[in-house]
Figure: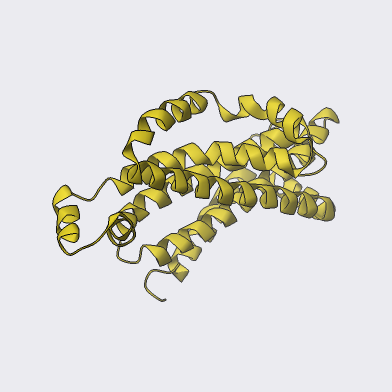
Length: 251
């Protein structure tokens, strides 16, 4: 495989890990006769996914679209703010306390406000994803942009580089590993925020299936939606890892 890409060994390891998990899960539920309402068997969940495939597939695409849009916007906001704070240091004393104060409250606590402000459509879910990821990306990007030593910065200045030249040629390459780490953490947070928001109010999405199935005491549908969401998140994470290895080839 091409260096920096996702190798076949990586894919095989994921497949083997998931297969082992489901085999152990199936065997344990059969051996100990675990009731379905506590922990259904994987094969029963898989069959429920097949039976409701159209509904679940549509809901998954809806949720992934909301998560992806919010993830992209939140990442751009976080990186953009970090760049501004590095270029204009006095702004950090104003922006960071506000950002810390907002992040001190769990993002899901803002779901009712998001539903009031943006409605039950995609807007409120995207807003929640933005809120969930922007701060963590801001922190990681800011930390990475400050990594270069003053001696390196002074050396570039001695060759005539300005603030933007130093930012593009020195600070951003040094910050890429930290930024990608923030993106990886933020992806999980944004997915959780979107699904919780869907459970509290939405026209479609995995969260709505979970909410409706719970109200109907349909445990298999709940597990089918949860498992589908896990696999969808895993696919998104795999794409992010592939992008990471392409962008940060020197690591």
